[in-house]
Length: 150
Image (cartoon, rainbow, N blue to C red; front, side, top):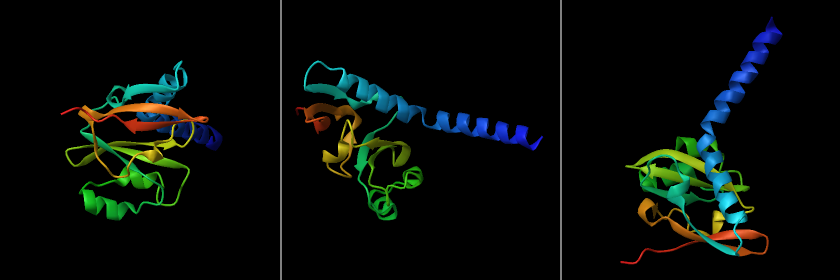
């Protein structure tokens, strides 16, 4: 009987975790597909096309960021960002999507094949201006912000 309960627990855990990461998986897989299957060494992408929820801006959070300090400076609670362990892990950056001073969701992005670490940390990239060009350099792609014209 305990084995059956254990199996149900594991199945529930897997299903629960997969649902919570669906937005992140969609973002990363769609972005990689658009960039890697491009026939050129650069491709323009609007980030808002890859995010399936409403948000005002996103920020890039690099490794070793002290989240408590960042929360104080931007006046947004970042509990889900803390769960990523970005404060002690240097294998990814976090993209935090914010609306009206509330964290809506955050995504971890590894450094390969697309490296968001070249973007300025903590700078709010507004949804209306989330146009980027991803440029190939070696075996990686780096995003560069395409500023909107006034």
